[in-house]
Length: 202
Image (cartoon, rainbow, N blue to C red):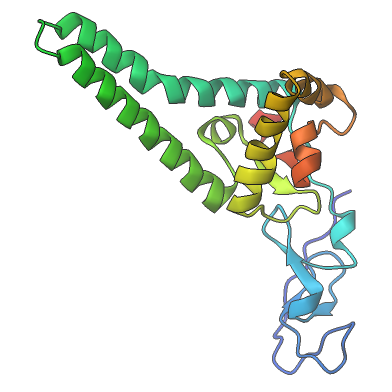
């Protein structure tokens, strides 16, 4: 049975359940206790929870198929501008450098896709592929992931390790998705997990 949703009463004058000298900032969506700024977090469902209840809020993990499909969509989105522009360059090439111009436009298009992907990751924790599959990246406590953690700990650091291990790390990283936690090695490095935000990602 799901937890009944608690309607928040007026918090004016209310004090934190853990810190009696601190004014309450919100009401825990699970236990109903008042919580100050230090004692609550916004979880994956964008609801406020006190720090005592937060570990008990378990988001549904994304399915392995959904994660693989999301990676495929991201790869297609990245190479599509280059492929289309190269094809147009071949068809329109007349010896005047049209092919190189179209290739340059394709590269700019790919850079545009990368920029948009970073924007999505920074704002909603989803790439194009993850948004398509209804999944997103969050911290293991269900809170949002900052962009620096997503870029460096979840992508750059694993890429560097992969180069120094002749891609053996990348193989093990991928296989770890078949563990019970469904977390790859890059998830463990960045303290992240991938969860479902709608039914298509199960």
